[in-house]
Amino acid sequence: MAISYPPVPPTISGDIESINRFLKDPTFIMRYLRTVAQQRFIGDVLLSNRFTTTSGSVLYEQNEDIYAGSDPEPIAPGAEYQETQIPTGPAAVASTVKWGQKFSVTDEAISRMNFNPVQKGLLKMANRMVWAFDNVCLSAIVSAVTQTQTASVAWSAGAIGQAGGPNIFRDVQTAVATIRAHNQGYEANMMAIDDQAYADLISDPQISLMLARESENSPIHVGTSGFPVIGGVTILPTPNIPVANTGIVLDSSMLGGIVTENIVGPGWTSVPDLNLPIQAKTLRHDERDSWSIQTRRVATPIVQEPLSAVLITGIGV
Image (tube, rainbow, N blue to C red; front, top):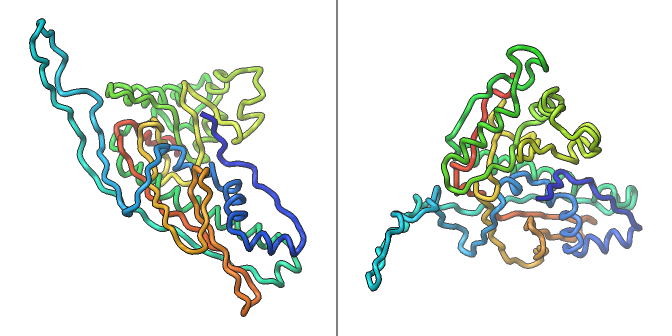
């Protein structure tokens, strides 16, 4: 799976006429926001399944068993097949929430600074949307996941050859084994940690020895634009981990997803091919010689398989 989180910020330029033409068409705003924010939502990466609703809520099941209730049995010629029960998990209901905000830019600001106030406003608004929704997603994950393990030693402690130092690889693989042991088809493929834990991980001497020696795609060459894979687990840094010194090892294909409601309203535009369905709307205020740009996302995260994740505590000091 290709991960491009966070992307390189885009640039825009043009004269006053083209700026106003840009602001008149919310589709242009959407295309720009796709470049700015689409794959910066780490919550969307960890909760990869997608659902839509027209009612504002969704009914789903948690920890649904992948096996039938009984084993298949030998059947004699002409005999009837034995019926088995198909178990379901406990039901839960989630309702979507409309997350949104707007900002204004005056004709004077555009005339004096061209695209700069529009660009900064969109970037800051997109960043705030990312920050807020990621907090909701990660908080939902941490609240739902009950499996925990404690790191052998804080990842910032010790060095290679030093007794009592950390064993990051073993910590991660122990979590992977815990997830796999449920025998429900879970296979951990990602881990979310905070920025300090990420720095400790990629600079750990033992981890460094395990990375490809001749590769220029390692963190020492490309930083956070290329994420290390430790035993099949892609490591993703985020400043939004809700519990300090805790990492989340998970199966992103099974853990859960995002429920989206596409509210239809005059002037609101979304781009159908976006995996990140943000809607945008622009308003011209001639009485104030200004523009307003509104964005919203009507969505909520759900955790369907909490047993497909483990929280590793104590990774920081």
